[in-house]
Each structure stands twice: as C-alpha cells, then as structure tokens.
Amino acid sequence: MVNPLYEQNANPFEIAQEAADQIAKISGIQSHDIALTLGSGWAKAADLLGETVSDIPASQIIGFSKPSVVGHVGTLRSVKLPNGKHALVIGARTHYYENHGVRSVVHSVRTAAKTGAKIMILTNGAGGIKRQWDGGAAVLISDHINLTANSPLEGANFVDLTDLYSKRLRDLAHEVDSSLDEGVYVQFRGPHYETPAEVQMAKILGGDIVGMSTALEAIAAREMGMEILGMSLITNLAAGIQSTPLNHAEVLEAGKNAEARISKLLAEIIKKF
Ligand code: HPA
Image 1 (spheres, rainbow, N blue to C red):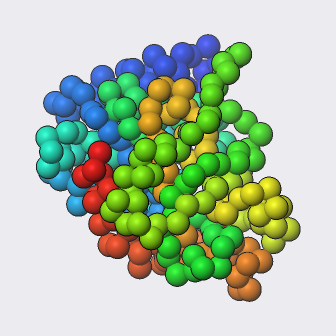
Image 2: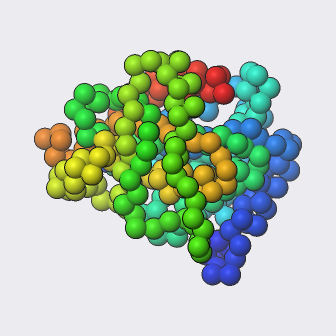
Image 3: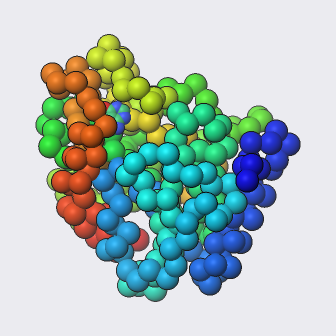
C-alpha cells in the first residue's frame, strides 16, 4: 500500500482522523486519555501500565510505515490504566532520517491527538553530553533545539513553543523521583551519529542530550494542543565525550539493561497523571 501521507495534496489531519477511527474500531475504545511513544529502552513500560485491551500491528493502520529500526515493536497498544483511563502506547516510530517526510514522522502524534489523548509522552534513547549521565540515566527533557532545519507545520502556522515540555508534568515526575535531572534535547537528522565537533557545537548552543527524534514530534503535539512530557534514556555518552566509538549494538544493550528500571519509573509517573 502506498502511504497516502506521501501525496502532496493529502490532508494529514484527515488521515490521522481516519487512523484514530480505525484504532477505535479495532480496540473498541472510543477515546484515549494519554499517549506514549516508546523509544529504545522504554518498551517494557507498556507491560507495566495496566491491562492491554488491544495490540494492533501498526501496519494495519493507515499512514503508519513498517518499523525500520531493531528495538521498536511495531504495534499500537491500547491499555486500560488502574485509574480507568486509557493509554495509547505507540511502539512504532518513523524517524526523520528514514526519508518518508515529516508528515510520516508526526503521524503517530497526530493520530494520538485524534484518539482524544490530551497528554503526549515522548521517550527516546539518546547520547548524553554530561558525563554524570553515563550508565543509563533517565533525564527529563526541559526544552529542545531542532537541528533538522524542518518543521511538521505547513503554511503560515505560528505555534508558540514556550513551555513545550510541560513544567507541570515535569513537576509530577519529580514527585516520583526528585533526583531526576533535566536537559535540553538536540535533534540531529541522523542516521549517522554526531561528530565530536557537532557534539561540542550542541553543548555550546545549550544542549545536554543528542538524538534523532522527538523534537519534530513535540512540535506537532503542541500544534494539536497536547501537553508534553519528554524523557531520554542516556544509552551512551555522546561522540567525543566518551573516548570509544559509538555503535547501535551498544545503544540497544544499554537500553536492555535500563529497561526494567526506567519502565517502572515511567509507569509510576503516569499514575500521577
Ligand atoms: N546520538 C544520537 N542518537 C543517539 C545516540 C547518540 O549518541 N545514542 C542513542 N541515540
């Protein structure tokens, strides 16, 4: 199936609505309250949140492409939380570097909003610029720097990004773990890792975390009026901060080691919402 989002004249919001309607039909849940995108290392959180009502292969839902990254589960899961609310767990992220266009990158977020979700939790595995985060720290994203030179917004659509990563939600996260650090996330295009010089640039610009996702998704979520919580698992120190070369296997391994701990943390945070 050709992804309809790739067509120039397509309306991405209508396609997101169609996707949300399909999710409602298959899951039997008419409206979701919160949505989560689970990046590298965060997948286990889906099992800890509550009772799985429906686990839908993303390929069955309009506009979603097949996952291209090992470590992403490729399903949309509807979970009933202990408080009776419903969460949509997105285990299918399209990265900007896949070259399917920004509409594809943010389709999951727009779909989540159309299912009714008012809170969007964006998680990722990322490189850390601060040495103290070595060894799998979970860090709250306080702001971002978007180095993709792109935006999910089309036309003259001037969306305010002040407090993009909700202070209210970060405060709730701190109630669960007051030791959680915060940092500024810098989205690079990827898929290559950054050069040490680029990491130094990110640091000088005010960045603390480097990665290849999240910023474009957060902008789209804000456009949809959602409140956003962002969290990074520091799977490695960024290039040049650590002396050894980076590789994807190391990132996956760090994710596996941290998975139980950070998934439990995220599940506890969501109980506060
Ligand atoms: N840079 C960019 N993306 C990443 C990294 C990194 O060091 N680690 C995991 N994802």
